Image (cartoon, rainbow, N blue to C red; front, side, top):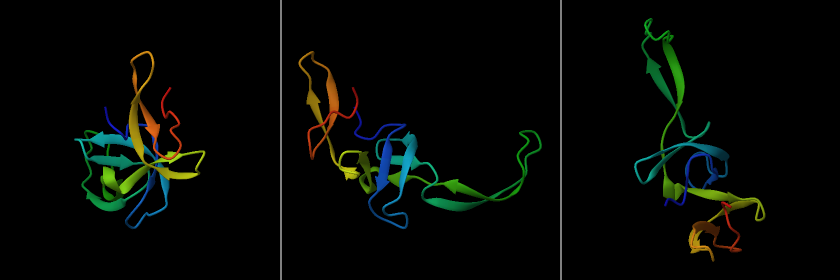
Length: 105
């Protein structure tokens, strides 16, 4: 079970986009995430008529290390660390470290 999952709202903790908030588009390997509209880089793209792709300079989201993002806690209105806890019915759930609130129900 991962601490950061696809679809989570996260806040960037370090780097050029520090403090920005976005949604996780994809989780790569164990330790990299792609966040929507954050950590953008310019990519020079060749046109591909078969796929109907135009050429030019495109903006592309680049991966961030999972340690550089924190899960957004609405009660704290900022990033928070994540831990795990077992419920009475035996399910393993993610919880916020600051207040013990369950992330996913």
